[in-house]
Image (cartoon, rainbow, N blue to C red; front, side, top):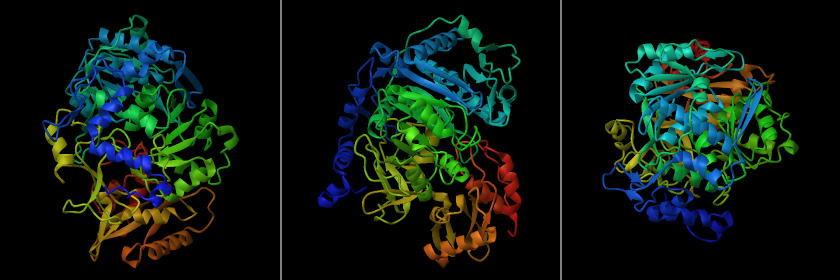
Length: 640
């Protein structure tokens, strides 16, 4: 990326510090990350910063040793901050709140690490964690890190087939699970799902530890033991130093072949990158309260519920609830108020759900949320309308940021701790230092500003990003590094503007070809989302005999909209024609009750497109509510 040139205009925009830091991170990455490594406590200091001897397999801090759990907990106790609040668990679905200081959390983690060691878990062994959003999930993750074991968290409630695939790939020595999860309207028994997965899986763990919840206790079988029982007799254990390049965790993401890809996260680069990100991107540190409204089963939960806040010495909030329905659209604001949250990190989908139920923001009381300094949003494209609504109602900066499971931390954002750059609707701002982000054409050459292309990151990627896939170097190269040699393919398309701001328009497979014209469905969605009656929307390209593909739009209206649906859809079709042109050929927009999504909030556009084209599209295991897709299916297939 060409950085903005120096001059008065640039100084007026306030990009000097960012520009210098970004340039330094690319021109001398070893100096930059050696300096950042000083924010971490090492058992053996890194003498070598980057191992580039075997590209494209780069390794950060290859001669160093540390323990991630020590950095997240022990060092704060050693530095006399043991009585500072580390974790707040807020569960509206159970009506309970629990608080842990660093000392209390360390005690729980050290004892559960002892319990795992008693079950035979040691350095390098894998532990699958299949749990609800409870403090014990955080304890289990940190206990694995303490032992040098590799955890693989599987989203609670995943179906047996998906869980079995992850068990067979990770081959865990122990599985840790909750007996159930709790939704606003139902209790989901996890133990039967685990039993079915173990019946299907070829691998057998040595033991299963089950956290019994009173809402649905599980019947234990041979080889299974209750959490309370193993903790009762467990002796605390210390931290095991591991190589910086040793894996901390495996997090599986869906693969195009249906076989999950095990994203590997190393210990050293991960600790350095997340510690740097808390101070420089999120402007959050010791004494602050950080809340990532996600799930520990997703990468946001790994990075910004569990590890980053604790590494930074901040208090982290673990929320077992929903943005609406537990009990209403004011749930998020109640949590901010009750716990003095300074920085909130949420998905655009969550804020859109709140906006749909409370479009005027009547449940937002700024006077009672004075602690809140900023709202960060990521997980799916942040449409300008949601961005503006949140900023106007909350009265705090709204920071879009873009990243992936594979990177583990933001690729692009306004780095508020480094320099709070102006934000622009529809853009996650600028590339974060360390990420050499490019927009390229089919020939791999940089695209001019304002021109759409494939978004890639030049190698080596910074610390914290995946070094490979679990036991599958070949698939790592084929999936990410083969399309443009020397670059990591993000799979997203977009453009830079003249100021160096990045616009991410969605997955490259969401670009459709209408009569020879390549059009972005993301651009059409941006127009639809701008209508005052629309809460959220999706545009997909469907097969057409004449034009190859044509777009179809689907919108969910805000609560309280009384206009006739046909009037709203006619206005939407005309809006797209006015903003994008007749070439877009968007002639059909339909009002639907809901859009199918994953549990992390991503709309299942690919699944919708397959159904609309008459293909038997497999339903992703990550779907939040299969009934939504069932209701949408006849609409998708009509007049095919």
